[in-house]
Structures are given as structure tokens and as C-alpha cells.
Image 1 (tube, rainbow over the protein chains, first blue to last red):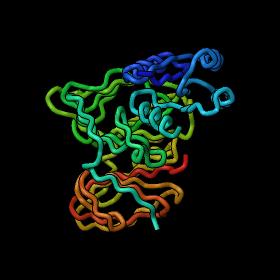
Image 2 (image 1 turned 180 degrees about the vertical axis):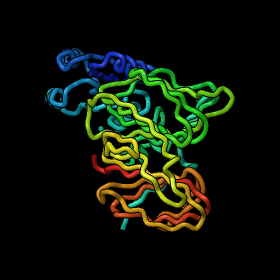
Image 3 (image 1 turned 120 degrees about the horizontal axis):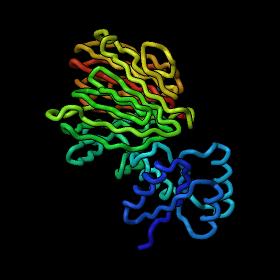
Length: 101
Length: 238
């Protein structure tokens, strides 16, 4: 089964670890975490992702600039601004974004 | 004419983890219902029952306004800002998670469940410094009136959050009729029946039903029995 590949960009190490753990708990999903927009673009260039989660810690300008660069490279990529931190909202946000696409 | 959405109590998702029974009005955790994700800025309304001595271990939050209202029993809260508190019935707790906070919540008592509402609102500012606040509201209640328990204003009578939201709570006898005006006509208002039965603009509601209304400047409340009602006025566009 091909897993849904999710790239998480989050500067907050504990929140990042929690989100990746939650993603990896779901059989059909696999998460990769990076902690800066620069690392995100390198990872995005090197492999294929189905969705990008932008999480805690980035400045608003950095968030929108990253989204623009990701969409320039892959126009259809869903980019989700994920906040909340725990499992509460995560799966809904992922499924909603994938369904929208 | 107001727009409305009715969420009957028995249509809520039930997440049963043994130690925790969570009755969830909106999509939460593994439950995803595209038609029930949020009501404006109101994203989570969980009606939780936690067994004696059990609870939520330490976990992080960010950029969310998290509100707890205890209904029965005692909920112990500890967080990364060194707050240690017990939330009893008649109290409201808010946590602005902002840039990030860790907390844990446990049923303080080993021999009885704790019942509480867990409510999450999207904030109107991101990456604020995390903050915690708790206040007793039951001493302010007057029979057959709503009392403000949460607002965006940093006043002394209610807790405040980073969102243009106002919560009111009230305990009523049967047969009370009143009009409750909204603070902002662009907001919506979500009515949650804690106890009893009542009508809102003629719509009959039972215990634990939820009813959202928007495009209105006020609502008409009529209690059919003794009732306890929570009103959550929130931005529909935030």
C-alpha cells in the first residue's frame, strides 16, 4: 500500500515529535519532519510528498513565502496550517485537505 | 432570518477509551465528519467523562484557545508554566497555548468520575505568549439570568481569551422567557444545553443538544424545565 507522505515543517521540537508520532500511528500515513523552510525546500526537492503541514514556530511571512515556493514547484500540493498541537485536529485537517484535492 | 444548525446530543461522536468517554460535537481525533468540523471559530466541543484517578498525560498545544468548564468532580491541571490547579464545578479555566505549552489533566479523585466540557477556539492572534487563567463564576450567577464568563476583554469579572468571543452561562427555572442579544451581529452563537429542555427561537432542545445560529442580532430563549445553558458567541469569519 502506498502511504500518504506528509512533510511537516515545525520549529517546535516537542510539538513536531508529537505530530510525527501521531501521523505514523496511522497505517496509511508516513511523516517526515523538518524544522525550517530551507530544510523543507531541500526535502521537497528530493522526494515526493502528498501534503505539507506547516506547524508552530514559523513567522507569518516565512509561512506564506514557503507556501508560495512549494506551490511554484508543485501547484496542486495541499499546504495545511496545522495548529493545536495534539491529536485533536490533525487527522481532520489532513483528510479535509486531501479530500479537497 | 437567522441561519441555524442543530446538533442533537445523540448524533455526537462517542470516543470510548475505557477511562475516557468523550462526546464530541465536532470532528476530533480519528473521527472526521466533513459536515461537522466547526462552528466559526469554535472548533472543539467535547463533553468528557474521565474515570477516577485517570487523565490525559503531558501533551503539547500551540496557537489555540483552550477552555475547560467543570461540571462534576475535580480536574487537576499542571502545565509547563508551573501552574498547578484544581478546577471544580462552577469554575472556568482558559489556556492560550500561543507559541507552545505542555499540560496534563487528571481526575483528582480516585473514586468518582470528573465531567467537564473541553472547548477549543481558534485564536485571533498567533504565536502569543502562553497564558493560563482560572476563575470561579458560580458565585456571580443570578437565577434566571445569563452571566458572562468569558470575553476578549481583560476585565475582572470573567476570564479572557485571544478571540472576539463571549461565553455566558445561566441556571433557569421552567417557564422563563428572555431575549439574549449578541455582542456583534457578524458573530454566530452556539447554544449548548447542559441540563434541562428549552426552546431557542422556537427550536426545542434537550439536554446536551447543541444549536448554532448566525445572521441574527439576538436569540429568544424559553425554558421548558429547569435548565442550565451555555451560550458561546464566536466569530463566524476569523
